[in-house]
Length: 346
Picture 1 (cartoon, one colour):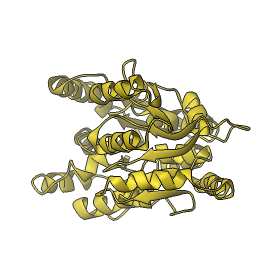
Picture 2 (tube, helix red, strand yellow):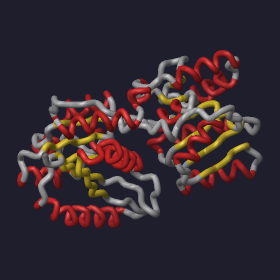
Picture 3 (cartoon, one colour):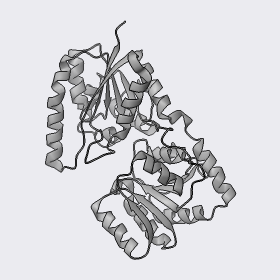
Picture 4 (cartoon, one colour):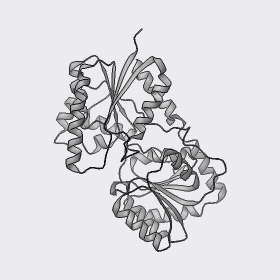
């Protein structure tokens, strides 16, 4: 019996300059290979991201599409695409050559929420007809896939978190009151977080993991002024596990997300979360149980919520830790990949 041949296609994958860009794609690829063994012949064609401007990004995509051309003449039973726009063009062309190939597309949020609009919707609806299965990473993303592309056949499946990497360490020392993990971008609510951090004062202990020139300088200025901030860049997953374990709460005030993975990583480490009230977080946070949410239109509400979190009794905090830890056993990377392998083989 011949092996099922699978090709994963992605515009996200770790590189020397962006070590953790698309790390979840790599993690899935490695775990699927581990689980499937000799049952699958699995390959990957991925763009390794680098720090470039607009022209550099155009050049990267041109190289990506040209580099994909040889794959048009190779036969796979399954092509699994991560990120819909603009890569759907390449795999749509592949389906013209190989109409019997099963085409699966994982939608991450950014590739559908903003990229598909009224002007181009007709085109992407046409391209989406070549899909055999849409795999949105969360319910809100699934709703957008249905609304914008008219796609009915869907399997909601987050990217997964490796519970062999993210777990509660034994007797961790809580060195930080709050931790932020993410890029220093407006969409991540870094301005909201910075305002809250500044308002909380010099007695509160923060860990900030991320980078971005403007806010990096602002954080460094507060450190010089006596604020207790540990500023860290490019942490490995093992290092992140240690930091989650050392923090009482993760704070993430994003304005938009796909299906956030950072929050799940923190919960796998028994660290409750404080987030904005966007729909993607409301899929994850059970108010007052494994975390708290605040009105994203009222940044000062985050400050009040952080003060409330600091005043929790130890008994209540331990209850929240246990609830966080038990929140998402089904999102372990191993179980997500088991489900993907079933889809590849059916």
